[in-house]
Length: 199
Image (tube, rainbow, N blue to C red; front, side):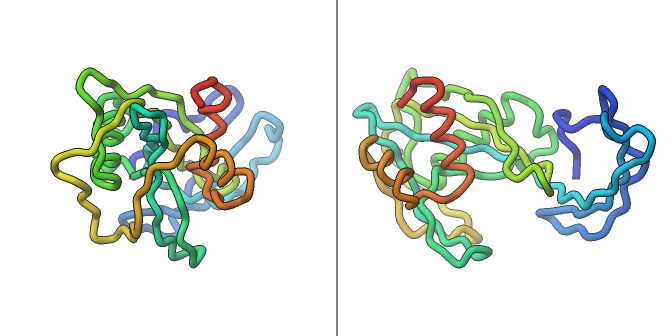
């Protein structure tokens, strides 16, 4: 699994070894021995789960409603309302055009919406999903001005999407404040949108 250019030894970080423990098409688990900026005399050992980078998209209609999908999540045994998201499967996952193309494709496949004519996605940076054990990071995009596509949704056979709906900003704020939104992707997107004054 190709590592992102975001995760590199620099400024006091130095990898001594990386021992593979498990690997499949989705994850690679390794035991790493690393010198850190505060541990230069004795390296630290850490179990790291490598994951592909991903995209998270906040689709917004011209009326200002946000589109969420409801998805079955097997690890937590729950149906969760989430912004559409997906892994970047291409080898060059650091390329801006590859990241953008993945975001557009995932939004259309999961929601059945696409960008209106003349509208572009707004990149909002990235975040680390659970930096204590994985190097996975997700790129955030606001798709401001989406319309239903003629093709409709095209769900992957491994996805458990059960619903897709438009929510007003008032409804969305309430869902976050009342703990109806509990996944890191959507909460991170919410924080970034609020911090930038976009909602």
